[in-house]
Length: 241
Ligand code: IPE
Ligand code: IPE
Ligand code: MG
Image 1: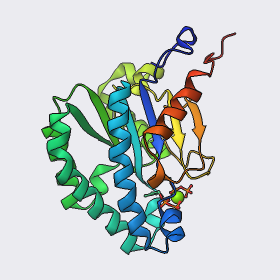
Image 2 (image 1 turned 135 degrees about the vertical axis):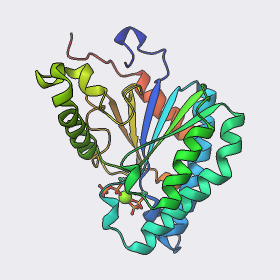
Image 3 (image 1 turned 180 degrees about the horizontal axis):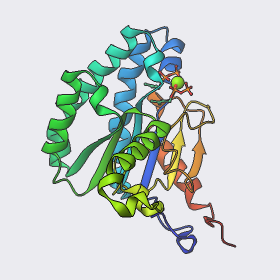
Image 4 (image 1 turned 45 degrees about the vertical axis):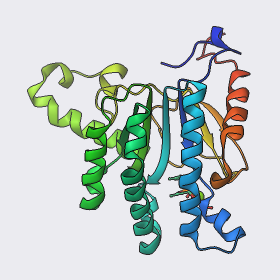
């Protein structure tokens, strides 16, 4: 889990998480409809994933739709869902060729059937990929993930006496959406906002945070390299000295 401080200055973060923000503002600046900003955001995803592969990152997680994003107008929500379907259908071949495993985190069961079915299919299709985990956080909320974990523990308790007595951190992790995914070493947020917006709440306890004013559609390999350089200069102490 994470890199130790001895790695300072050398090691590329194993897991980079990105809050891809600013698509709407990018579109507004260009006097385009917001959905065009989201389309441009998909291009930035492609560039970033290719760069991450080349840099030797093992896991990349992308916040694509939060549990709070249901507050947006229906047209934008369903435009985004259409874009996610397009992304999965068009990219699956390339992902398989590159040995990338596509995974999803979030309340997938609450998504429309045509998206949910595609998500399950894509996970099956790419499950052998072992070069990079590409985790798309879809209908994801950090608080909801914790609540879902607690509810699953409560359901298991009567059958499982050990759990009823109380659980530790590692047991708790088993109930998260992707228990085997290591915590993010670095969390990047674009567009100048400086908050987590309910992303990876359990997993971010010791993540390094990096904020940039660049809007997500303008993010690219150079921006990723800058974030990694900044990460490498940080000393991760994990509460030690
Ligand atoms: C991020 O861009 C994409 C999603 C949240 C789906 P925004 O749509 O939040 O863009 P801004 O923040 O309005 O510029
Ligand atoms: C966070 O962006 C969620 C995603 C990137 C999917 P938002 O644009 O929804 O966050 P807030 O509303 O500015 O906090
Ligand atoms: Mg936003």
